[in-house]
Length: 146
Figure 1 (cartoon, rainbow, N blue to C red):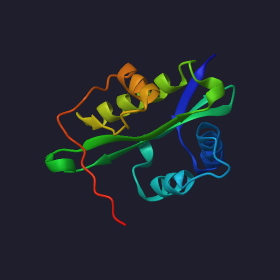
Figure 2: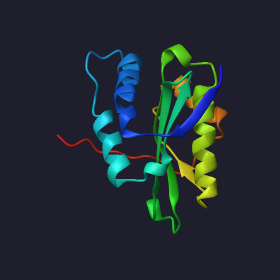
Figure 3: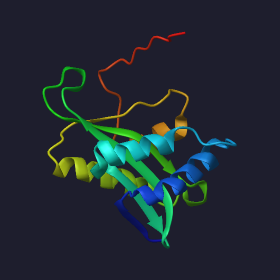
Figure 4: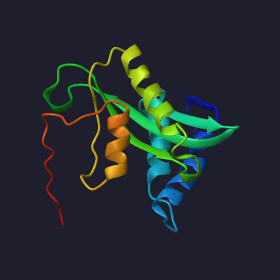
C-alpha cells in the first residue's frame, strides 16, 4: 500500500470530518472541520497534511508553529491533532504523516515540537513514541471554568 503525503486542502475537510466521525463513533462531527478550515485560511497551513492511499484521504495531521510558547525564545512546533481512518490503521499512514510533519518543521528551522495527550490514550502514546516523542519537562495544568 503506497501512502502519499501532501498539503491539506479545504476540499479535504469533509473527508477529515468523516474520519473523525469514524474514530469517535459519534453521530455528529465536532468542531474539527471548522478549526481546520480556520487554520488553512489564517493559520500555519503548511503544517496541515493529508495522506492518500489510492487517491482517497486515509488520514490527516494538523500542526502549527507558535513563537515564544511557554517562555521559549524560539518558534515551537505543535502537533495539534492526527487522525487515520480505521480501515488504514496499522499500514504506515500515521507514521508517514508524523514523519512528514517533523521533516517540515526541521526544514523550517523548528528545533522543538510539542503535543499533548491524555494519560489513558495508550494507542496515541504508542504512536507518538513511534515517531520520536517522549515525556517533557513541562507539567500541564488546567482549571475548569463553570
